[in-house]
Structure formats: C-alpha cells, structure tokens
Image (cartoon, rainbow, N blue to C red; front, side, top):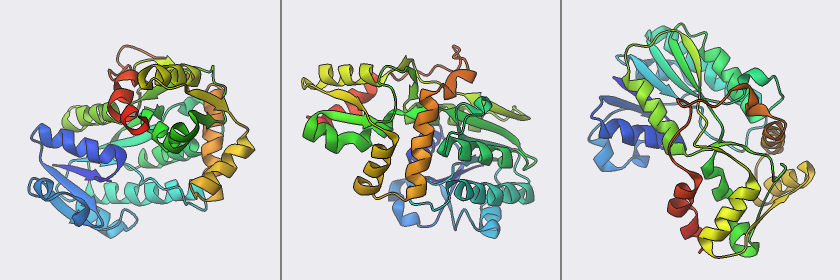
Length: 292
C-alpha cells in the first residue's frame, strides 16, 4: 500500500489522481477528510492526523511499504529552514519506526550548486534528513513550476505585465505539476528500486521569462511583457499583495536570485529528465482562460 501525504496539495492531489487511475491501493494522510471528494474517499483508506505528530504519522504508515512525502506549502513561516526541517525530522522518525521501505520526496533542483537558494536550500536540507530514515529514497529535484505564473494573474489582467527579480533573458528549466506527479507515480508503483538518490526532472525545455511573455501575447492576443524588478521591490510586493511573512518573501527572492545565478546548471538535462508537457500546452489549458 502507498501512503500519500498532502493529498489536497498541488502535487499530492495529482499523485493521488494518477495512482487511483492505475488502480493502486492507497491510504491518504491529512487533517480533514472533508477536503477530499466523496467519490475519492470511497476508493482510498484514510488516516487523519498531523504531519508534525510523530505518533500519528507512524500510525498512518503502518502497513504501507511506500510513501509520497511532500512538506505542506506555506507562505507564512517565520523561519523557513526550521519549517522544512521540522516536517522532515518528524517524517524521518516515523518512517524509521514504521519500517517503510521506499520514500518519494518532493525536493528542488540544484542541490550540488552550493548556492544560497532560500526555499530550495530548505528543501535540500529536508532531503538530507529524509535520507537518514533508513528507507530507500528518491528525491525529485524539480525546477520552478509553470503554476507559479498563476500568482501573477491580477497584474497580467490589469496591466499586461508580470514581474520577478530575475533577468528576463535568462533561460532555465520549468515544469508542469502533472509531470512531476507522473514521475512520482512511476517511482511509487515500482517496487524494485533501492538506495538513496536524487532524480532531476527538467520539464520540456529551458525557457526565459521574455520568451514566456511573447508566448502569452501570442496566445491571448494581448500585449504582455515581463519586467525585471529589484529584490527589494519584489519582497514588498509579496508582503503587500500576497500577505506573506517577511521570512518567506526573503526566502523566495533568494531562490529566484539563485536561479538567475545558475542554480540548475549542476544537473544537466537528459532524455530521461525531460518531461512532455510544454508551457504552451499548459498555458492554453490553465492560464489563457484566466486572462481573457
């Protein structure tokens, strides 16, 4: 049986959908089952509790040989590194006590870069902790999600602009969440792998934000441009418009700065790390209807 954490989250919900489509035995672990649709609840086992409660997590893992583990998304942490380390430490102890054999962990790309990368560095620290759990581990080292563009919808609709503290001509990998889920599901179903490894996933192609803006313009029929902003201005936007904590705003800005400084360059793209969903396909389905 496979235990899926964060089954209502960005990646967790898609992992759950894809596992169900393949007829897998699944248990989900969450605080409130009411957040899951009734038709899904009929097809899965449910364990309720907190990912920060070692006893509850251990109980949820009983009888499960494989775990999909993702630290819940939050933008209000007062200490970003402590937030990720806290979840990872509890998970590592629960995995060890339950005797779980395999863990698929959602990490971030660029682990070998040694760059200070804010949120990504925190994910890497979580990866190190999970890797000490005595289970076999596959850490999915992912780039920026296409879905982060959805946080720019208000500015795109109002002014035809989206902004980040990164050079608009810098090309880097980006990926669709559903492709991350597909890779996770592939590993969750496979009962043969052992050991601890990082698995880079790159999306279909490296792309710049200026290229993304041009593609948005073509698909929407509206003039859209990307604007590089200072780190200070971006932090203020996160604080004022998105009501994040200061620690999160600084950490996200550090991540974007590291990407612009070559965070992902240490993990070369290969055929096996290249996923199918293009940003054009993703935009047509997920972004264009929200702008037009």
